[in-house]
Image (tube, rainbow, N blue to C red; front, top):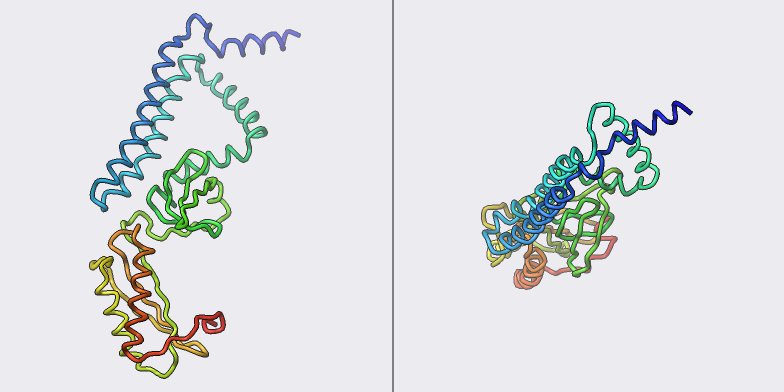
Length: 272
């Protein structure tokens, strides 16, 4: 009984008396943190959409970093106001919270930890185009538990951060303002490959969406029934990637026809 009573006293000493806790100060800290985070979530995307495209990804990437920093500062500021922090008390609190949270919110905590890892390792950031579990789209927000992806079909998908523990993350631009687009053409074997290659390169070089500082490549491989051409180029703005591919496809087809090259159907056996 004496040991139980002693433990109860130690536990009670962890928390200050209610009259000693400044709830007004805690409220101001929480309100200030919420206000700063809200301002960052509204202001930085606003500036990113209206500023130079080269700064867009940097501004969007600052949102989760600011949120993380403000939450850490708020927690470190509030805890000493409520708890009587000593090294021994810190160990008691950490152990109790670790056991309770570990059993009750295992998956949720795993996503939170993965989210903190993602903020520093940056496998994705707002504005990046990523593919996770077959879903490809733009990262709109990086939250504490999950990221929000908007696909080309305008579907919004929420992906928990713990995917980084067991899934490959394909990042098409990795913080850059542009990304490589690949357009495929399958041409019947009876043609001049040097001429076709030059024609497809001209198609890319005359596109209104092209980023001229990036290379334009025309790669080809021979398949059993056709020659597979891959036109690889970069749009000026990564948000134009689908229009860019459409433009290259339409004008590429016309250019091949004018060059006397015959396209064949792109079936699976051709790519084998």
